[in-house]
Length: 101
Image (cartoon, rainbow, N blue to C red; front, side):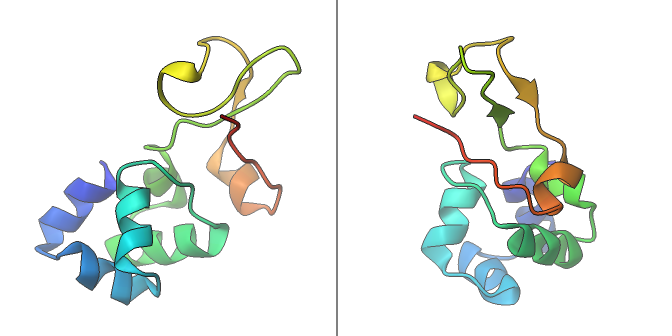
């Protein structure tokens, strides 16, 4: 379920959800639209707030690790089949993964 759907089920505004997890409304909006990636601390807080797993929170973020010959990132610039998927465990474990544009 997307962050937006999770938020709507709780009947919260973006501002209320953001305040509950300790981030700004504008940052939450970027997370909800997958225009930004959450830190592992925010993933944990969102998961606790919504009562879902970290995988549940991260499932909406299209992230892959570049293999040297690929582009990783958001939207249409990402080539399908290149790079490998990143699990929630890897993101939470502290390994930094950032999309390139």
